[in-house]
Image 1 (spheres, helix red, strand yellow):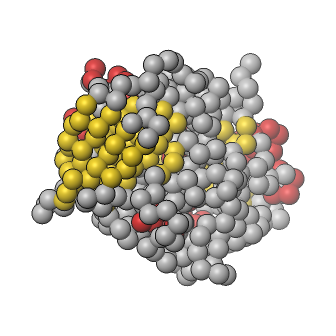
Image 2 (cartoon, helix red, strand yellow):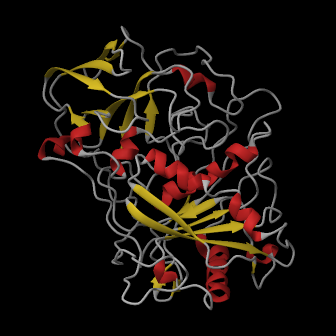
Image 3 (cartoon, one colour):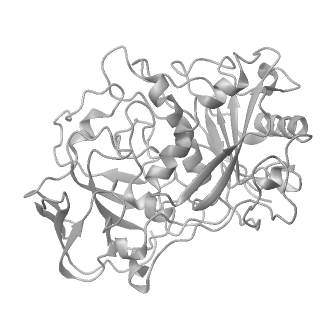
Amino acid sequence: MQPQPQPRRPRSDASGPPGRRIPRRRLAALACVTALTFTVSTSAGTGHLAPGATTAGAGPIVLSRSSAHGPCLIRGAPEVQMSEGIPTSAGYARSTGTVRALTLMIDFSDAPGEGKALDRFREFFPQTRHWFRTSSYGRLDYRPALPVREWLRMPKSFREYGIERGAPFDPGYRALVQDLVAVADPKVDFRAYDLLNVLVTPNAGPSALDTVLSVTFAGNPEAPTADGKPVANASFVYSRQDDGSGSYDRTGYRVLPHENGHVFGLPDLYTAEGGGAVGHWDIMSEDWGANNDLLGWHKWKLGWLDAAQVHCVADPGTTEFTLTPLARTGGSKLVVVPLDSGTGYAVELRTRAGNDEAVCRPGILIYKVDAAVDTGMGPITVQDSRRDSGGCTRAPNVHSELSDAPFAPGETFRDPRTGVVIKVVGAEPSGDYRVRVTRGPIAAGSRR
């Protein structure tokens, strides 16, 4: 018997001007991961399998690597929830190629659908698809499927399901998923899809300004089955995540790429104290306000970077690299400096481009990855080049302190404990940056 899902930790108010703060962020539940064996879908996503088509489903995330990357494949213990270890465990949705996202809009007798169900769908699409295409350099062909274009009325009232912040999968969500499958089954062949998005009518539950209910259950083999397939990777989005800045029409969709990040195996990077560990440098940390991308570590983890774009510095000595902006297709993207079998530093170049519209100080971003830390407990920590500066952005609800964290040409990061030194040597006219990495021997021993 598999362990039951455990709740994700909340995050606190993000930084922003007075009166424009997002409340404590969502609690969500995560299931224990086990391998699933469904093959790649070749159907058109119409709700029914085409003749001769195979089923969609979870599959291994293919990591591009060489033998030289071995020391940089840091790993967490099996009990770690959504470890940052590489490669990602099996059981999550595929994150490369064509991925079909079954999208259903639901309402309740005590919360009837607001407006047309298609209007709810348009709050998230095509923006979410474009976001993933940009972030993945075109390697994720994310296709939202809409076999049912009306509200699906659940047989119980919203109150009866007992959904609230931090609600576990049992019993409320199990009942909701079972009912959803029963109502949708006449019109939906669940075998044709890789993941499920449930867009709940926004008037069900409290406003997101009061509490955020949106949640994902990922890699969950204990979920109810639909057409013989566990509904193992499902994201639920509730009230409109309006940050109070008037930018909802442009940025409100971003809660869905965050939640879908979980079905691809990515953890929450915020902590109970808020976004102070990573700030606005990854959508798994802060997903409201101005746009931001995923960290290079996550792009490698998801299979969006080639082996030649990732450099592993495991041997003692000094090595120099030229990094291209993370938002630009092609070129070297990531330098990883392993510290032991479970931790390491990652180095990348962030500029204002692509999904990174919030960057106010471009430069070399350095962060520590710890594969032994659970989701929501701070598995990644950005190293701040300007501590206690207050940051360089005043964008609403962006964690401002870390907005100027990148290191500029001529600046150096040092870790006296490990002897790792990372110097930004200079910037090229092309926009590329040169970095010099010096390290001592990798620490002996195994996982902590």
